[in-house]
Amino acid sequence: MQKLKIAIISAHSCPVGDLGTKDTGGMSVYIRELARELGKAGHAIDIYTRIHDPNDPRMEDLADNVRLIHLKAGREARIQKMDVYFSLPEFTFNLENFWKYNDLKYDIVFTHYWMSALVGKYLWETQRIPYIAMYHTLGAVKNAIGIGEGESELRIASELETVHDCRRIIVATEQEKDDLIRYYDAAPDKIGVVPCGVNMELFSPSDKAATRRQLGLNDEKVLLFVGRIDPLKGIDNLIQSLPLLKEKYKLVVVGGDENSRQEMEGLKSLASGLGILDKVDFCGSVKQEKLPLFYSAADVCVVPSYYESFGLVPLESLACGTPVVATAVGDLSNIIEPGINGCIVADNSPQKLADAITMVLGNNNTESKLTIRASVNRWAWSHIAEKIAAEMKAVLEKQPAAVA
Image 1 (cartoon, rainbow, N blue to C red):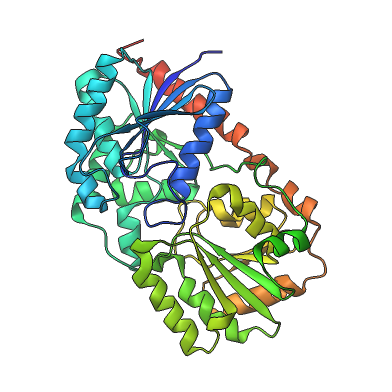
Image 2: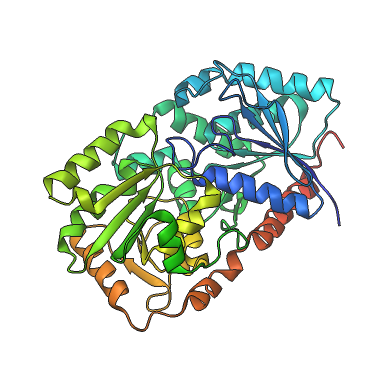
């Protein structure tokens, strides 16, 4: 089987950053887990990101055949996304120098998010190394939803430019494919639909009582939210649904950092105004290795989002045997099977969320943890990596790289 040399570019977000912070979420998990599985299959992967901290190692091994390389681009600190954009020329210059001095050649470049796609576009134009792009979220779609801060015309224009320039686009859902065609006039035959995956080794069921003791939780029903603190996530509606519940509960919110302090304070103020602040625990960001404890301790994981490009959190929860209540965003209508592993709500209104949570908590027909876990076996990362590698090889067969 052909072994590929792959450069993965994630300019604005580090794949080993703290999850649940403003610019570190599902995309970082995707890159890290996909690279790990591709490395297991014998492909050689280098992941390029910018230095976010002076203590970042310039190069480190993440797994077999997988390296993470930090390049200087702007201040060696966490900076705003648009500051990353203005640092892209420095990032690209240092990337080319790193390749030159280390005599590195790649078969293909895989870019993540619109800023990285611009780097891929430059490499295609100057070195004829084909690049495939994955955007994870689309600016035009976020603007159409109209929740939270609007996306810039610069982002939309950059996405439009790279959508038509890249060799292939990878999306996680048919809906995202439709969005690319509708908002960016993308060619349908240029888009490959490959779902995201879940680490079935890391995310597995544990004893609920034991995990609750570790996390200091009591015997009440535990509702769990995992993700960035962002208006698009619909956390305010989840909090407003809590007074409508009849059972004793605790909502555990995992995610957030200093950059989302304002949003966090707004949610705390909302909970306080409803008289339920003592029933909501804001835990901040949590290392991925600790997340299975939270999933296993919970009675239900709630995903009240207005928009998800796919929905990794539900996969992680289900792999731990915990049912999910979610809006019909991303690919969740294909992942969640009502009566088996959770419930899909028509929208994220507080009443609908409360009704669905109540139903799942009281559903005596909900299957066992192992049955819930088995429902996501087909999303194991090993299967997803095979499909991504096949997409890359198909691109190379049509347009061989200029360098071997």
